[in-house]
Length: 266
Image (cartoon, rainbow, N blue to C red; front, side):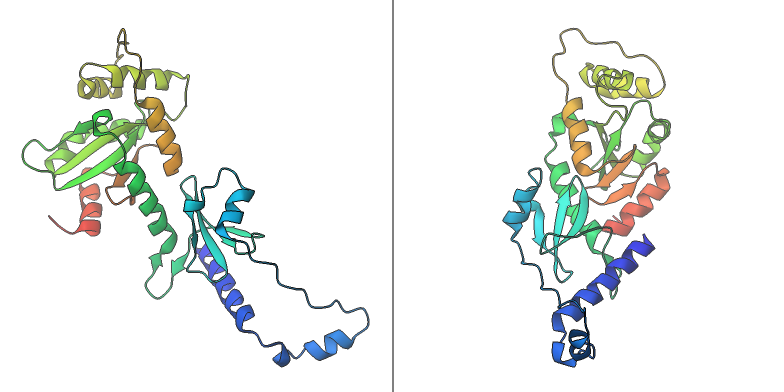
């Protein structure tokens, strides 16, 4: 991470230097061109538009290409990751960009913005929600979960304590092993159950959840696809309402502290 930031910083300085360079002040300009066999100075590549860049890569949405704060680069969002592509379309950097004066992670802010939009579009009826016992929750988090993953089970074993701290947990399904696997089938049984909350708790304790006859469609496939768009790399994956990635498993008090750092104490 630190190395990536240094590389980005050096590239930013180099880009700016090239942009303002005056060829008449280059000590090599007169002597280099006069030497036998010296190559002529290279011409800068033509710039391409965001639309042209998107046309080169059919899976890339032009709406996800922006002008970057980094001179000479476009900021491109794809599959939950942020890339920096030169405005001639010839080079790409994959890594986090940090504003040194404020230590602000520019790339994470962009990812969070995208995740927040994706998470807000989830149909609440397809989530399995565990809320505080009384009153309005102080905070809400969305958790991508797999019924079989050990840390998902550990997190859920502490769900009562999480709720007692005023945190509402909205579960969406992300079977890590993918379609056609045992974990996928278990997730569908849970989301098909007449009482999904009880079924989820039962499954996370290692007990079997029976298939429901006549259950034709579950949100498991849609939520799994959403997780891939968000850029999930594992479960559990916990996100705040503003799209910030809070981490994987967090003990209840640590989760509360993290949310207080983002939103302030409530």
